[in-house]
Length: 173
Ligand SMILES: Cc1cc2nc3c(=O)[nH]c(=O)nc-3n(C[C@H](O)[C@H](O)[C@H](O)COP(=O)(O)O)c2cc1C
Image 1: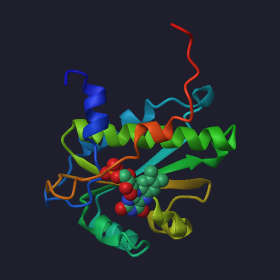
Image 2: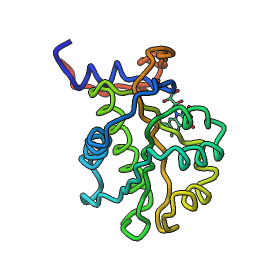
Image 3: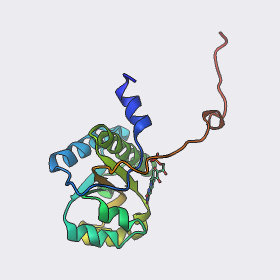
Image 4: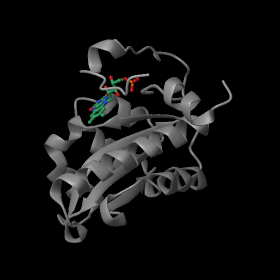
């Protein structure tokens, strides 16, 4: 397939197992940059990020979620926040953070890295802010775990397209 964006969309899978190889800080920053180029309402760009590779911090974060094994095994984490002091619309700023996170997952895919969007940890978002020492003005949206994929567990499926399209209202041809 010559269309690289479509290729990345269809090839990307959540990756939860990683080799021990570290992720370069430049690569993490490139992923965050891709996130920052997502669309946002009024170009508000409400997203903020914390990049983590420190082992002690990762193990403390791992204790906050039942997906701790993923966090522990991932050499790098990107915590994605909304800056509640820089929001203009509750729904649209949250939508923008989703677009940002998806951009990051696709960037990781294209860079040959594996990533997964971790949301269950939001149940302990206050503790996460404490651990990484950011103010509660920052509202946790997700932690994206990043690493070099081991190459396993990449199956996924989707509902039939026809079951998702409610109707098509088309011009007569
Ligand atoms: C909002 C959201 C929250 C998610 N939370 C978790 C999570 O806490 N743990 C996890 O392993 N995967 C999590 N995922 C990843 C989904 O399980 C995954 O995207 C879905 O099963 C489809 O698989 P795929 O990404 O490989 O296509 C989350 C995804 C989204 C969009």
